[in-house]
Each structure stands twice: as C-alpha cells, then as structure tokens.
Length: 266
Image (cartoon, rainbow, N blue to C red; front, side, top):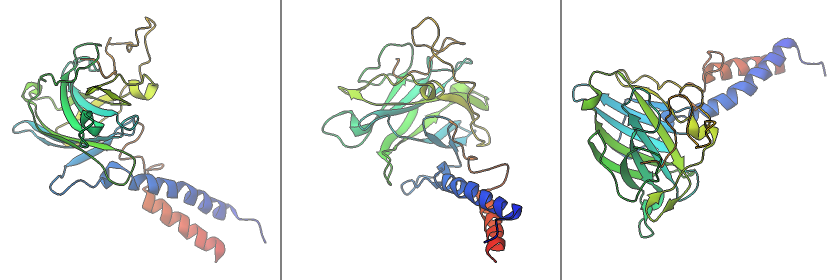
C-alpha cells in the first residue's frame, strides 16, 4: 500500500481536529435545554469553572433575566453568581446569588437560593442578606443529563447601574454546605480567575477576565492588584466560540476533512 500523500495527511489532520471541536460545540451553552417557558437572548460559556451564563437584558426597566449554570465542586456543594457595581470588580462588594445543592437542608431536595452582599472575608451565614439589586423569581434546579449541574434563575433590577453597558460579574463553586451555610471554596487558579466583564446592551459575549490573580504575598489568601478576592464565601477558557478552530466552524472542518478522506480512499 502506498504511503499517504500530503493531501491525505492534511485530510486526516483536519478530521482529528474537527471532531473534538464539533463535540465541544454541541456541549456549549447554546445546547442547554431549559424547562418550558425559560428562554434567553444570549449565552456565554464563562472562561473558568465550566460555568455558563444565559441572559436577557431589558434596558427600558432596566432588568436582567438570567440563568447561571455550573456544577458544584462536589455533590451537595453550591454555585454562585453576582454583579459587583464597584469599578475595581472582584469578589468584595459583589451582590451575589447562591444556590445550595440539596436545598441546604436534609429534608429538601431542591436547591435553595440565597442572596448575599459580600462585604468582607468572613464566612457567609445561613440567612440571606439584602443586595443592592432587587431580586425576584429566585429559584434553582438540577440540570438533566448528568454532571450534577445546578441552574440558578433570577431577575435583577439594575437601576443603580444606570446607563452602564458593561458590568463586573463574578461566579464561583463550592464543595460543601454546613448547617445551611455555604463553606469556603477552593483557592485554585481556576477559582481565582472566576470574574470578568458582562456586556449588557447587546447581549454580546462576556469578555475573559484579566490574568488570574494569585494569592498575595501577605499570605491572607486574597488576590493581588485591587485588593479584592474571588473567594466565596466572604459576606473560562470555555466560550461560545470554543468550537472555532483557526476561524473555521466545526461543520466546515468536518466537510473539508471528509472530502479529503474520500479523495484518499477513492
């Protein structure tokens, strides 16, 4: 049998690249199936922790209808998402929504949702604290299809954001809940990188965060730079474009690869 030509080798290479990319595309935020009646204008695979955000922004109110999707760090843990109205961003100052897997109580199987104003680095309590953005329609469920992902739903009134088109947002996952309160999450690089910018006005993709901030030399576990932390409690990169490879969509790559493969075997 003759050795493969350069064209045949290229076809096989494209096929090897295209198939994983197509699989990644199928698992992106666009493929999330929500319960009947829940639809969103935009979604983004966030660049850390395997999380995704779905949202619809109504500038006339203004309000943000959202669904945050992530898997707790361990069964029975928690997931969280929030907006930080401060210019510096980060975790301190975030107005956070937290969903506790298992409802935060032995007798409950549905995730319970809390609101927290993250004012410092003390552990969060069992009870919600008021946040700056009036929150309604708070609920959560566990996504089907395995993986243990929790979907956190809410509608936020964003009057205090004013005419801003971009806001700082943060997200996080934790491994455990103790007596109805979320325990402190890991301080791994992926946890510390869980922050970025969310474009409200046109439903555009959330931009990736600045370079992940590691713990400061002071040894207190906080981020360097602006003095904030991506740590929860304390009161990625996956994106919708991950399927693109060198600017070519997965279907196009698959088509090119199959064409080359047919040429090779013909």
